Image 1 (cartoon, rainbow, N blue to C red):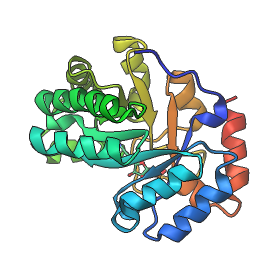
Image 2: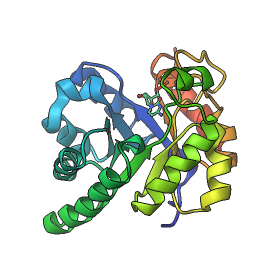
Image 3: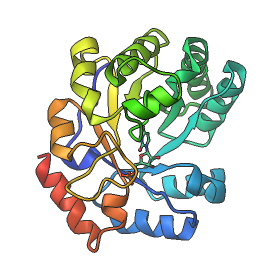
Image 4: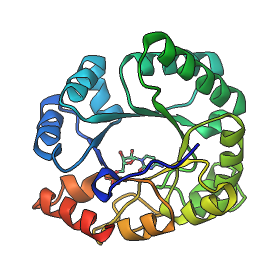
Length: 240
Ligand code: C5P
């Protein structure tokens, strides 16, 4: 797997974390000339549904379905088929779901996309959420370092033929060292000098890209800004 060849403005993914479909549509319409990919997570999907995803796609943008599937292999396999049919360009599963689940997803996604003659979406494995730190991982019984946990999960994802990983900017360098260009790396927890909110392992856009990130997921730093377009422009400039 080769890393995508992206222009700076193609690296930003805007997280549409609002419950209202109309508000999300408005963000896509306003920013689609500056941002190519828009991320739909559970907050929006519970309102927008699959019809809403099609509406976003019809505006000519890429849709990242970020529902972080984590269930038994057969359930996630069927969910992955649905995600292909919804026309998602990329979607997430949890690497903590294990090898068997990830492998089942990689296999059916290829098959389903070929059957429907759709472009194959990127399957992204979420490693350790950017809101975790060492202490919160220990609370759930994970005592290895965050980096070792991420590398271990990435190793499983590699064997399961997963296309890319979601990780924090802090682990990008170690992942590139260990796996080269094998994965597309998608990095949330991006803070261009703004408040951290609930995120713990944060990086600036320039740090993440210089260490080897492909895509940057940005939400509140843009959507809660006084001038969102200005923030997008400054992120693009900082990674150009
Ligand atoms: O507003 P903010 O930039 O923190 O939003 C980050 C987005 O990335 C949210 O939609 C969150 O669900 C998502 N995400 C994350 N950490 C991960 C995976 C996804 O923050 N490991």
